[in-house]
Length: 312
Image (cartoon, rainbow, N blue to C red; front, side):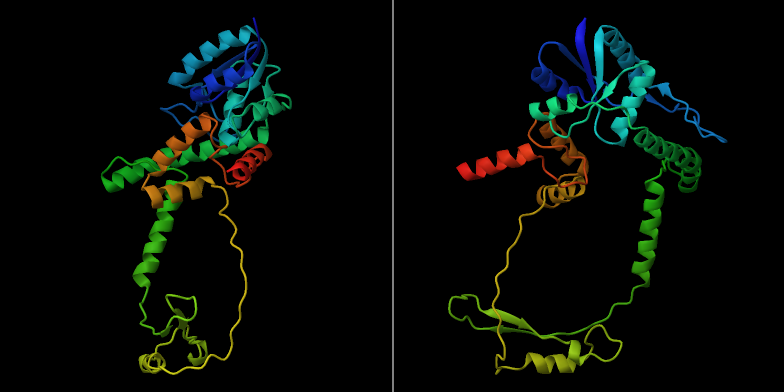
């Protein structure tokens, strides 16, 4: 009998975490969700809208395998991802495997310190997060089953709709209407380039502030002749000059959205490619959790980074 069983989501993390925990522990993976709403029926209906769950095709084998491990474990820890989906998966595992004293643990980085700290501070499953995931899943089902068929019939193609696609299409349509209704306006300005002075080798530029010349209600200068007069000046007097120092902070750590945007702009990666690579880095313990809106770094990571910078 193994003393303790740790169940996480990704099979790619099993080997590394098993090495961290060592003997006395068995680490296994749920491989994501093990139960879901039925495929060929709604699975949720009025008046209570209670979801009806069944094991997924993959989930049947996973639950069978995990059930055998649970029988041989003194304690079971559920270490699925620290988000709504992860919390729901933990609840499904607890419910399907009939776990009475399962301990829920979460961590945002695969380091020994983070994992040991999580295991020393277990909690119960957060049912509010589970309910949030259920609401999200049920909304997906209602949109998918009730909108996909009419959408496919209207377009002549097999298309799917959902809680994200439906409002996204509306936003695209509304934006397209705004673009079509837009009237372009030709406006003017002036910019003067001065010769290099002292150590400013490339010279310097000054833009004409047009605001004092705007007519009431105008946002831009529409008088081309006036702009040409301003641009024609060649003899100017500098009436004021201010010098100041500024500091530029380093960019904030990546969130999911900024990571995908930067990878797309710099490397032309698709969001799918970016997240696949980030997942491998996370599983290898090289980065903290990448599916997040928080730019916070762990204290341990900050200390390691600071020590590295000081020694470089």
